[in-house]
Length: 327
Ligand SMILES: C[S@@+](CC[C@H](N)C(=O)[O-])C[C@H]1O[C@@H](n2cnc3c(N)ncnc32)[C@H](O)[C@@H]1O
Image 1 (cartoon, protein in one colour):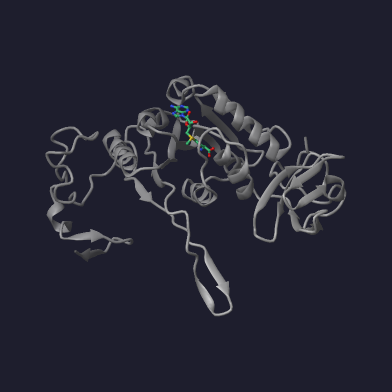
Image 2 (cartoon, helix red, strand yellow):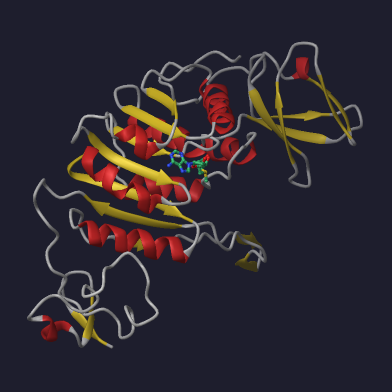
């Protein structure tokens, strides 16, 4: 195993050492991820590269295989590591991990609960953000996935992170044993996060952030409505982030032809103080939003506007800052 980094960031400096993972990129941009070992050889269709040519030398070098092909050698950044590491469950992409860290306001020293740990990709971003003084408890109900997550986290950091606890088990069942109101942030990436809204609400501090990453709009709708029905959370915000790469060569400056079209949606909401309920929304639901076909978490009779002075704002959508736009 590679030497641990002192700050548990996973970032290593200095010459490459045996046990470290490096990425070799060929002239066509193809990437090969290898773990350096003394005496080992990296075989490709383009020839062989001796690991000993890399060990003890700086990253950022260009090495030549015996077949004459050049390879650029670099340590992988966190986002490259998580998209190439072994996985059990699907991983959170770097663009979404970045949004989660900001949207859920993960800070150094934060007490965070995460589920499910899956392959440990999001775990690594959360650990980086909380640092050694925080606390992250990751729940994963599948033993085999938990093992993958533990291995990936250890391989990237080169050590056990002092602020991380990985628990194999179901989040809802396990949260029942946690003290109430002791957690700053709850971050969920799982199939049915709406089942965890109640349990998360019990452990979150007032003002704490509940953050959910889901793949489909049906999941998004169910989470949002469950948060509203719970009553102890602020009006949820839902977002999606789309990143489009660009080609920039001479005058040919344009978006790339291919892109990752969809990953998931982010929903964030904040926990209210005990006994408080969310203010009545001053905006009518869209016509038909809770019509005869609606069978979500809202009970019958909760489907209409709930504020008596609702008519004042029903003509326009709310804009940031409280103004309204005529529709
Ligand atoms: C999409 S994966 C999470 C991937 C992870 N965020 C990553 O970046 O590698 C969803 C995981 O949630 C786990 N899971 C689903 N419901 C759960 C629950 N109630 N408690 C704990 N884990 C759960 C599943 O076993 C699965 O591994």
